[in-house]
Length: 248
Image 1 (cartoon, helix red, strand yellow):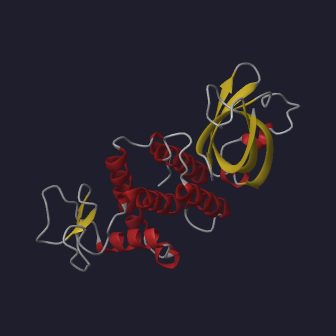
Image 2 (cartoon, rainbow, N blue to C red; image 1 turned 45 degrees about the horizontal axis):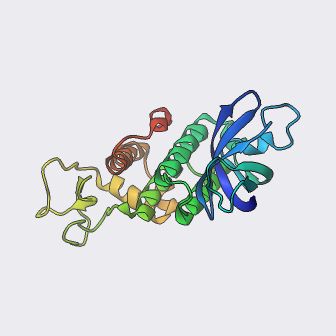
């Protein structure tokens, strides 16, 4: 029997029996972890409210073996709140739908339990912190998170230089299979031709240039969000269900 301590973000909470829940977290050291939290649905639970989605927590796991992942699910035995991002996110529809899509995306990229995904974890914590602060439009925060998640998982997109030959931009033709914009010589059938302003916006979101992103017009936000969603779906090979509810 062993105890493990880690900090993580609650991705999902599923009912188990009459009073328990299965909690899915993305943790710093252990990647995705599914654990049982006993009695958290009771009104007298000491830490039930701390294990809601969007919560950033310090959690202790109890495992029946020498490893965290054994024959059964570990137990959550202690939970301390690091940052209750959910309090600010769930009160606003735009932030809530964007945040839900972020949680689902993070879980998809950290699909295998027990495999550390530190960059994805740090991106999620930073994204939720920014979303909860409400200083930027929620869909811009979501698109920035999606683009950076793709990048840290090996699917970074190019929005200036040609993704095939490296010709310096700006280039206009956007190809999902190619991984970004293409020059005229490398152009392939089926390329989209987004507005130059949209490509500037997407590049700004990827690099963290919020001054440029915040100043962009709404029509370019919408076009950019469509490209990001399509690019994400192409590489994940299926869509993120939460994306359909995101407020544009």
